[in-house]
Length: 353
Length: 278
Ligand SMILES: Cc1cc2nc3c(=O)[nH]c(=O)nc-3n(C[C@H](O)[C@H](O)[C@H](O)COP(=O)(O)OP(=O)(O)OC[C@H]3O[C@@H](n4cnc5c(N)ncnc54)[C@H](O)[C@@H]3O)c2cc1C
Ligand code: SF4
Ligand code: SF4
Ligand code: FES
Image (cartoon, rainbow over all chains, first blue to last red; front, side):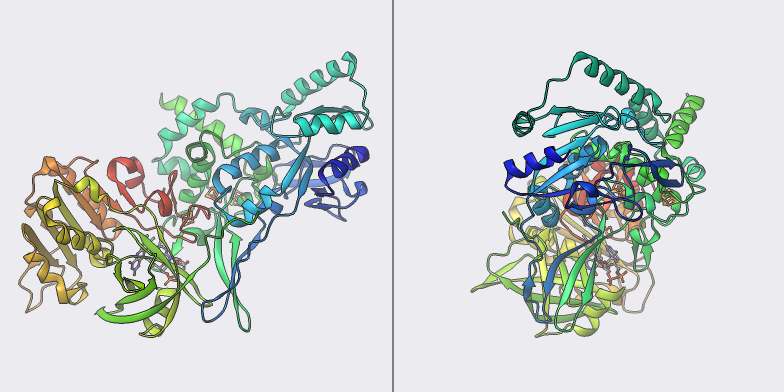
């Protein structure tokens, strides 16, 4: 792992490394200064409404994600004087960076964000354009709420990376290149070609990983058709959202949720215009003077669900807004389960059909 | 490479203010000469330290010397619009960025009859349409203007409203929800006036703007009168923070209202137009 980092460093002229950084508590996506900061010796235990870090070697992810870097919770977009002169345009060039140890679902989430924000949102664009290398950790043992295989975004990657690695066990890494840079890196690391014993093991582990994901969407297209048919059913959405408290946690931990609102932070002789995350499940999202565009919680829950499964594909040229990471299930204080809800969608539609 | 920042504001001088109605004023802003906009587009107007609001451009941009002038009609409803009404006067500065959005499809209306249907402050984004038709009168067929407000004092542009009736080949129908002694036009809802529309229904387009409930009633009645859903256009309001399709907050179904709209045909909107809170 150390060698891998060093080779990237050499080849790409000393970029910063960004990854899940081990701290005293839960890892967050941040700058990695040394290999010891990587979460290599811990595992996460994830269940609906539950998250715990234990010893192990299977860290998947946390509430944090590459979104924390690319579209941080607060983005200063402009600093302006009381006489409306721009003091600072807020946007600087993104740092040259390598994403290190991100997950397949993270990678897919970035592809989704690219479709919505790249070359449109200045902060995102600057940071995204600074990414010069991508190293992915494939998931040989998915987490307790993961369902990436159902939405085609994991547990392994096929494109969009330089190097991907799989931890076959605590000590054994199987690496694969995904680009010329990746091939060059692996070559200069002087690695041996993996024997068929290892590649077979890898294949078996991937198969097991897919089977182990308890949450499954048997038929995505059917679920989408059913959702389309249910858009106007108030009763259905009220039923499905009745436990939700509208906290917006699911929005904030979602690696593809991009909604922001703008606020003014007023200083002595300037104001900063700041974009801050806002989740569509929260009450203030659609609130306006004298009205509300999604007053009832069921409306907000409906938009959240339909955005992920129906609207993103229309906005991105085909990509789902859900990458199957399961964060919304883990970090929901009530433990609401999106996949269970979607299965209900199919049932309701079956009953009607 | 540093990307361009779409959130930069142009400093703009207020050169005129007109009282329109209780809590409503029209402001003339001076902008650089390179500014231009289409009817139905909007600007984000920024008040220092408070925030931005989307406001429709309520006059065709006017080039004079080295400047361009545009008007905005604002109604005080909350923090920023309240500050505009109470603090902004001739000589004030405001921040501005725009124009944004897709406006009224005037091209579509060329050579055909046109109905302009507005309620309350909804006339603001339609006023540039009327002015454009007036200045290229021959390019369009009959023009019907249907406009109503809660009471006569809430009508906008009272100083020029009746002149619209003098545009050649134009019918002006006004309404007020409540009667008043000097009011000689229709008493009732503006949607009542749909009955009196006098155009070639099969070869016309209708532009509607007003409160959402009024627009829904209007569209129902228009469909009943035989207009097709691809002939009827509405301008929608959503809470907007960015105006350029990146903050997400204006979404209506899969549309970003700021970028894909605010003007949509009823056929484009499909069920989004009818489902509450979608
Ligand atoms: C495309 C478009 C064109 C508009 N044109 C006009 C116009 O020409 N004249 C006019 O008076 N009003 C217009 N509005 C409505 C106007 O933008 C709101 O009244 C205004 O944003 C209210 O802001 P506030 O700060 O005073 O209210 P607050 O409720 O205190 O503001 C809170 C936040 O909500 C937003 N907001 C509040 N109400 C609305 C609303 N109805 N629509 C969208 N965002 C809202 C504000 O921008 C602000 O960010 C338009 C809205 C849109 C979307
Ligand atoms: S689900 Fe909600 S918060 Fe997330 S991107 Fe969609 S509208 Fe925004
Ligand atoms: S995290 Fe759970 S309770 Fe909170 S808004 Fe999302 S679904 Fe509702
Ligand atoms: S206002 Fe931000 S996306 Fe439309």
